[in-house]
Image (cartoon, rainbow, N blue to C red; front, side, top):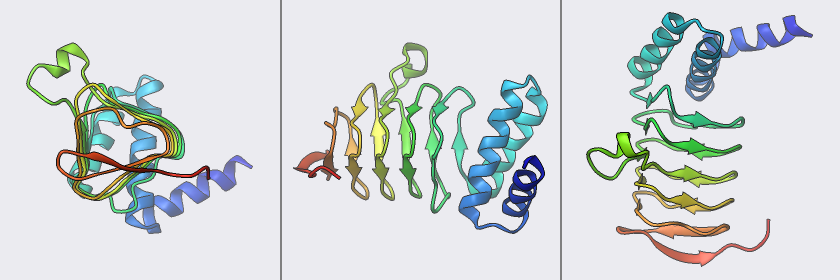
Length: 164
């Protein structure tokens, strides 16, 4: 069983889509970080940044099922928490709203099942609720409730989604 998983990951890293490779690089970097191989982890984070222009801070916390369909220009700051099964498209920034937020821990918390479309910026200490959708190029600086769609600059709640 383990050999099957190893072969699958090897295939994804060498022949998979950019999305699969970027996600696997992140997963491997976090794995080696947890196991105490900081140098290997650091090199994998550098490769993720170099190959995909995607910066994910080592201290961010990202749950399983994280997807980056177009992993280009994504920035995820140090204190960001992303729960399970979140999808982030290209050119998205998740981080502090102002200088010094790194020290204060003022970062977004993205709850499970959220989809964040291209170019969106989610900034400051806020929560994006479960199964929410952040529209393309939206700038979110306030909490978004569960099952909602947020669009615009600044983002406003367009409508509440029905149960899925």
